Length: 300
Length: 100
Image 1 (tube, each protein chain N blue to C red):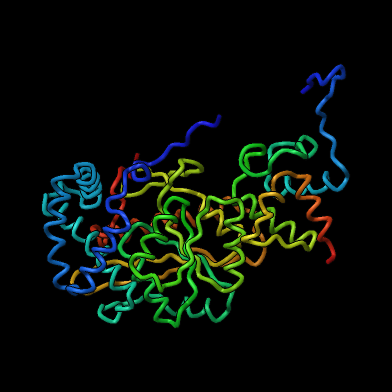
Image 2 (cartoon, chains in turn blue, yellow):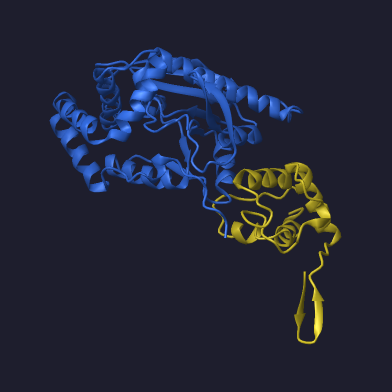
């Protein structure tokens, strides 16, 4: 018998809302329109503020860190509202209504260069802001092939949610649970795919490295970075953040070039890449604190 | 490990063919494993329990096998589980597909 791996709270916490609930929400959003649907967000966030002490507690702890002061109830509400807004806008973004948003993109020329060269790249995001808005940029660019890589359990949920929101949309979601999952990723990269990973969360408690993050050490998973290193592909950090109203900002910035040959100092290179990722994540947290969507004790 | 089988005593000793030993050495070198190549049980699973390798290690093995032997391991192949089920099976697969 192997020991049961440590699992983070968010993996075990039951999902709020099954497939049918998502479908109902999508129906309401698409029929009432964004402005009316947004009105629902206020009571929903209030409800969560009252009914979910765990989420409020983790929000409060995070905000105290990033704001450097005691967070007010209004701050926690704003944090929840930013999260809810991104979740709602996902419906519109996935239903090809990205033209309804004001999206400012930084660093797109780097992606164009990678696209021109072929061979794909890995896009490292975080549970920060809207991943969907970065994907909308990909679709505007004439259906850039995007593959998502995630833990098996999340992969299953994501496939179900995507199917509920827009069944016509073809996005490949690869779960890392199979022995040949990453052989598939290697094939997609060769085919010029952009492979997206949210690289901030550790799921199984294995292969973690601690880095200073917003004042205290936090554990980050080495896995995604190891994959990028083995595949010797360019690594790009992607951040899509919500700025209120209809405004989003998207940033693409290089984390690592594709090495010419297998580097001798692999460990140092990997460490440098992780450090850069964590430092940039901290930078974005400080600039737009309410976009942080890890509602559990990240520093545990 | 020794165990009784009828009235004979069978010893589960590790015997690698030359090709298997070469492949085992390649895997140990590629993954910087702590074990000696000669200590790898040719019948034990490569993935998960056994050698304790993960899917990133499987990726590295597939890349080095392709480089060294020109044998491509394909994604979404039902037989991957069988191929990676032991050093022996992986070696058999490589020998069957070399120089094709």
